[in-house]
Length: 290
Image (cartoon, rainbow, N blue to C red; front, side, top):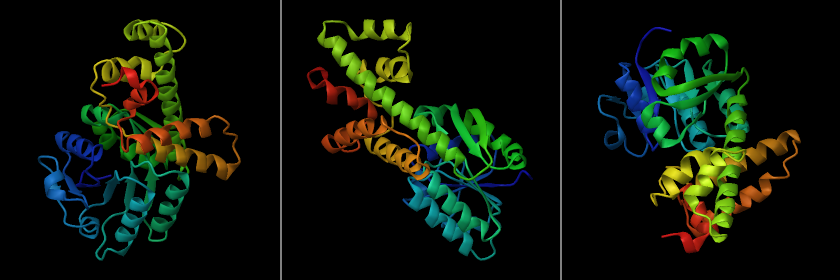
């Protein structure tokens, strides 16, 4: 793949720092965001004024957008672009397996390659270029994208070759993350009501078999400090858990645990719309909140 400019669409909480790291790595990066490119563009990035304009400027476009509807709309715009140069779309969004397959079909009909490569690691991972990338697509394209991936991530995995397999990996990861976060909130609240100090609970659990990302990171750094700033919202967990359950249902996979986990996150989001996910603790143990 020649070292030409890279297109990037979606400059939200995750997309903006990812695009910024591409700029910092020395890669010419042209960005677009429907919500306002000029105010969201990272310093040093070039600006495109529409998706179709961007498709006429670059061979490769990366996406980091909220959902499958956004990815599909962008795919249609890229297909319709006159003087289109884009031949590869790399989707870092979390859109679910079925949406990834639909976007693949839309683009394949126009001779454009699509790979789903969702990311995990939160806003801090996006800022610090330590994300995990879960790529699904051809091995050749995976190899060609390595310089770009290395600028945005600390761990890059090729999880499969079929569209949607990267999404399957991402939603199962987020199901586990959401389960751990909710279960940790309940367990810590139980311990606190028994008169145990939260710091001691976390120290013991993190030296024992109950350790998980909530006990190791989110609780000591976001809950105990009172900052509640993991940068991922309850609404996003609700969406991702729905995508997981939809994908499981489509293939007849057993999922006896996810309905209960999903219900907890829906309840938090109804009580406190778009709450930071660390607010799950004050939801299950309100007397210890601020």
